[in-house]
Length: 222
Ligand code: GEK
Image (cartoon, rainbow, N blue to C red; front, side, top):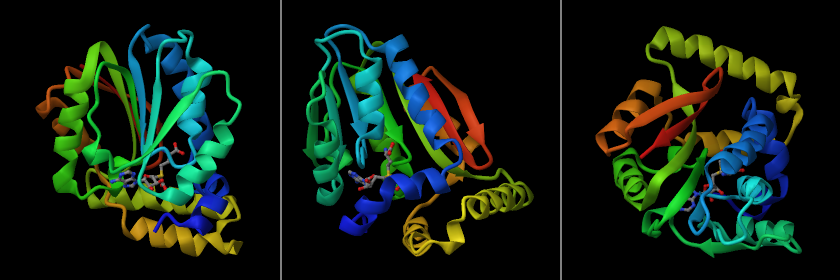
């Protein structure tokens, strides 16, 4: 699914299909600056080409914080490693399924549009593991495409998202077919479902800090 061709067009594809993607990446830098603690780890789960990992590296003010970036698509990791070459702060890229990764002593964990690709039944387990691996004061940044709370709200949000994609010249592009294929394997959930699950697995707060149409980003605290 996330093959060499998707990896090649990925930056263009994601910024044309996720409204606010660039703003979210920028704010991951800021949220890292605010929350990274000396001697802890940072994780980017489902890192693709490493845009969020690079933002975390820019935001970090402590040299002793390893950044661990995980993806299970070799084509993505190959490009991600090339992008990160020569960086002052090294990023450890790992090819693995994010469901198999043990999160330990983490101050910032990023799931930037990745949870949506896991089968819904696997989502609680992953989030519980993240919560257990967070150090006191640690945060999870969770960005997702969401479904509306009602069919009516969903229709309004989808209409706006499609207008955004047209504005981005999306239908003219060959990559629109790739995107459509990806979106068929993506299962968005309602914002209320995300909130309830985060609470159920033990996060004490979940605050939406970004929203545009049916795309949100949440900061969840231990
Ligand atoms: C960004 N965070 O640019 N284990 C590991 N990786 C996975 C798994 C899994 N089980 N499932 C999917 N992936 C990035 C964008 S893209 C979002 C994330 C999108 C990986 C998959 O290989 C892909 O690279 C990524 O999750 C999702 O900030 O394409 O809409």
